[in-house]
Length: 288
Image 1 (spheres, rainbow, N blue to C red):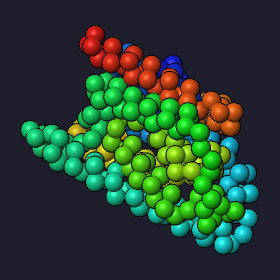
Image 2: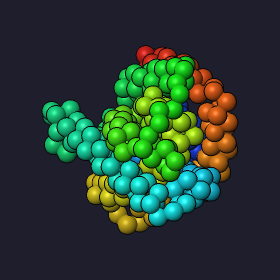
Image 3: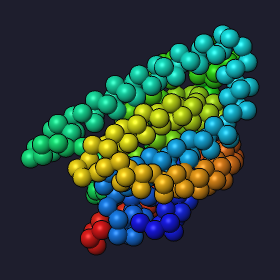
């Protein structure tokens, strides 16, 4: 894998991760088109390190909004902390349960099956993209007024809504193509959460979710057959470079996302996902 390949993947990841179009699907397709194996430990580590770059882009971009919304007083801080814990609990319960179930029952002839073995399957990515696109379209086109909640003056959503958003985030974990940001923001909108509040809560959850994902992939790489400490270092260096480029691309994508979300053009991301799903299905049909 050359430095140019890393930079290309980083830009794709940085843009697509923070737009509701599934970065993982785009990166997997790009890797396949460049002749790489998306399921290999070094490539999954690269993908997670690119997520790290976008995580820091999220922190840099949303920090002022989080500070004004979540850190205005101690009561609000306690409320959002509890809501994030509830959402993350349901993410772990549903996402972790799905991953365990797929690894146990989805590979009947494999002794040490891992969910990452499915990440290169374009026949699974295409329908996941289509489902995300439909959800985004429904949320974007449906005329809704934010539903008043007990915590509307502080966090903009209540604990029940936070739990549902976390549960939907859990559904995204095993399936490349089912956009995390697209699904969680759309779920919040459908539950009556204001668009901007759904956006900043969704990305707050992303910051919590990213470190465990990084740890999982680092452990997977270390435990992989024939991988030594030297190989780990060799895999980490290009990944760190990629994280830097993903950070820059992520800031650009977030400005685009916020502008379209606030101007009522959210549904166009759904249209894109449906078109992308058709393109991925075609690539699978022709042998990728």
